[in-house]
Image (cartoon, rainbow over all chains, first blue to last red):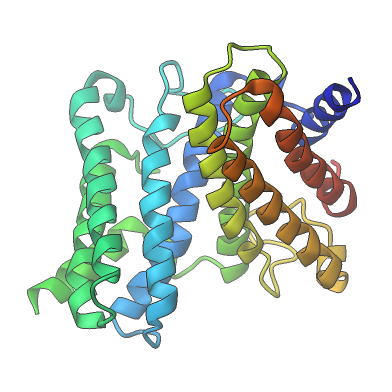
Length: 152
Length: 152
């Protein structure tokens, strides 16, 4: 019984405002969180790939693994009803929800290309060889942003 | 040469404001992103563990894996100089930076306990058996929030 209370209390402590928050806000915060985490890693990989910072193969490999993991979570945040938030602002275009098949295809492309990049880091540690695979991931980001991320 | 330009252009498209943003803002957005992603998964696992929603072993297992992956990234966002943001608000207590050893120990505990939970999902699919391991992760969240997350 003790464990039940511990878990209940801890859940409350972890998320004191969850019960009040709209589900759409949670979904928006989640997907934005994943995109921020992708960006954090991607930015550093881009700088290494472009030679703006020294190439650290171990770091690049770790970050490729992270991107592959994060990519698998990203699509989940676009639940029905999360077009707009209550207290959170979303840059997601409403087109996502009526062009869902195309959007999902782009999200799957992100998953696939990230997995390809990760697989490649297990075959080579050479910057020049990894760069095109990173560019392919970036192209997917751009395609999706062009179509589905609002500019403001 | 073409690929170089593609990557450069795509990087710019992915993060149009990165060059202007303070590095501390990036770090704060990154760590908050990871915590939002943890919360998204953890909330659902907690509801299942407590019986507030039906227990879906497959989903619980996937989310345990995600938490284990995300936990490994969380600490990285607390870089030096990211105590406060420029355009982003942080709830991180400044104590983190002068009690760093203790903070890092808690972050490592999050990594370890998440890994234990993930390992357990590969041994059992029973809610009652998994619940204490989830509670242990929650206890770590709470310890760290009590000490290092500002309330406002």
